[in-house]
Image (cartoon, rainbow, N blue to C red; front, side, top):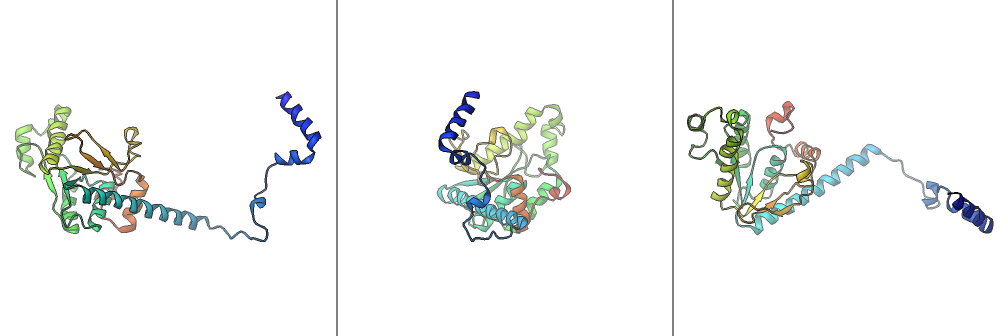
Length: 249
């Protein structure tokens, strides 16, 4: 450090003030063209316009991904859990006409342990967007027949054997649904903010399920705030429990 200071002093003696000024802090005015007055800065307006620009970009990006999924694959399927991100995707699929023309099928897994509001909400969005979801549940049980499920598997399976409950009520119906619908591209609402394992996901990826099933993550780059901003902007039908403080269902 002493050597550096001595060198600086020596060079200053040779080159004079020009060297010293080179290291001096530069005033913002130095970067401003002469004669140009800075406009008054409205911070709130700037933030609002920036968020609007971001939302427009995210929306166009998501719609482009959905177009690729539904136009380039014969059997695009959207497993819909009716959480915030999923209702945004449902809204976009409707806007693009893919629910009406059947280029994307909606799949729902009923575990028989969902909030009562969830299946009621499904019926609401089916009516609102004019589509019919394919519902799958535990093997050998008629859709919606909780009594039959309790009789065959036990009402307390989720407490007695959580691994078996997950297999019977979640994993097996999910995989059966994808197979039944001949899925070759699965659309889902995964995002990068949902934990370390998803932190680097992109809008498209290949998965090992079914020997290389393509995955489309149209809102991969959205934050939770982006999702709820979009829901509010377009008045997107969303799960009633969100209004009661549940961020996820």
